[in-house]
Image (cartoon, rainbow, N blue to C red; front, side):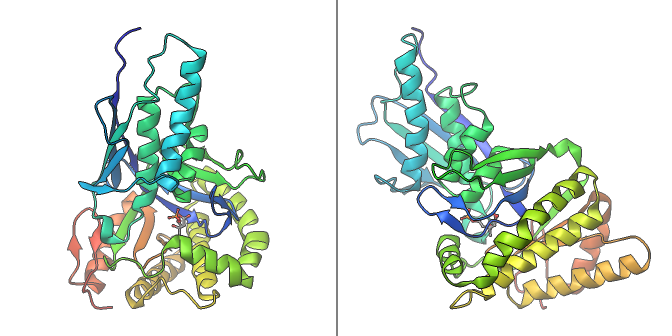
Length: 353
Ligand code: PMV
């Protein structure tokens, strides 16, 4: 057989949910308690780039470096699970097809870099685990045996939200019903080109590491919040359908209503947790008020809502808007947060609320 290509590099962008995932029904397989839907940001902004090489000379076994610092892969953590899921498929392919190079048994060296500060409270685990799985899939030649939804099941076991970063554009993670997790995967709702004028603006309110990590936070909310049970049963299913329709119709007004309502419902569930979890801070809330006021004035002028805010497990705001609105929105932010640094993301650190 020919000399195998044993190095691969892939990248994956961050995704920001508009219908949030919060709660696991299986913590080992990372199976969620509800469906979620997100927008994958464009490659050139916030992304992880991962390179993997399989080489017989790597005598210390599998190793991984994250932003230049070695991370312990361990024997049963999430990194180990993602690697072994990919390796297992390759092993099966090699067993079936004798002409395939035997690379599944070779030790791996993996390097992953984020083009944004990991400590900035921006979802780096989503892009990181998606890039890891995409890279190993390329290294092992898993496509076309496996498609992106199949691969999303591997990324899901690294970090739930990572499964959605295997696709660009508008992506749903269907929770599935099987105990095996076989139907808990990401699917494309619409490609990026469907609504290319929709843009995201990331307002970095704080770059401090978040107080309650998502895994611990979810566990506590599932265990103690009656509001979460209401969210799972009565809120999310209808909202998923409405969001699909809003995206299909390029209906920004409905998209904004649903996105903001879902962010608020998720943060209400965090507050309904015992003891309560506070992810948003005073600056986050000032941005909510600013957006609500901006939209109120816009609706009064007959133009409909023009900005949607959403917050993950931290205080940073992500604002969605049509491209043509961004100039105005930036002017408004500059006016109310005069100390803002403007770069790729909008740094509101130290800005007065
Ligand atoms: O995948 P995790 O464990 O980082 O959880 C992400 C949870 C939220 O970001 C708050 C919501 C979401 O759907 O991305």
